[in-house]
Image 1 (spheres, rainbow, N blue to C red):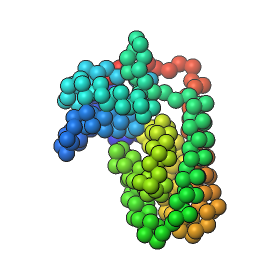
Image 2: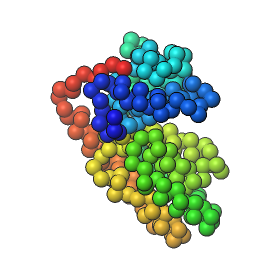
Image 3: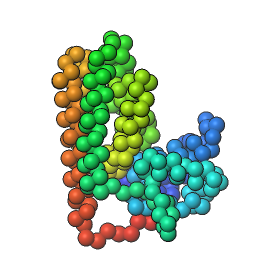
Image 4: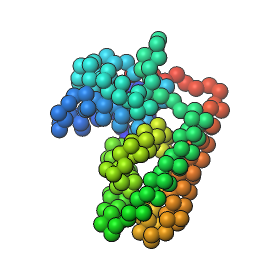
Length: 244
């Protein structure tokens, strides 16, 4: 199943496909289950509000229930899954107000992170950003897209030197990532922004210019996401989402 189109089988085919892709190279089955489920949520194979049955997920992925349970707990910490007393685990939905708050906080944190980076900017970092930006702009979907963007912004915000700030930014990015990176991609808000545009602003050494490009991008995506969520909230009859 291509990213961008939720399946009528509740994402079963996509999960099996992801399980095959992730079947090798993992030391921990729990980490593999986590990556598969995160990818499925971010790509839209698993929909917001969809119930996640541990037995079904374990069968589709080809593991026991324990690593699935562990993965769901980690995804809850990431803000992608939530547990209910009676319904169990479900893919977390995001309200309009919550999305707006997330993006407003992201603007504050990411602009500050970029200011700190530019105060210590080196030619080597700019060269690395150019390389990572080209890779990120060629990835269109799924885990590769997410990983490429994460590596780019980790370098841009100097994640190794500022791990706490980076962790806060990543947590917020995950909360809204599925609305931008997967089947809920909003218009051209994300694709109109190339990493090269931001890199050139950073390379110029003009802090105001660079942070302005970053701020405008985040606000543009925020407004597009809010428009989508408001349109969905206005729909009076929503078809039931299949359980997984």
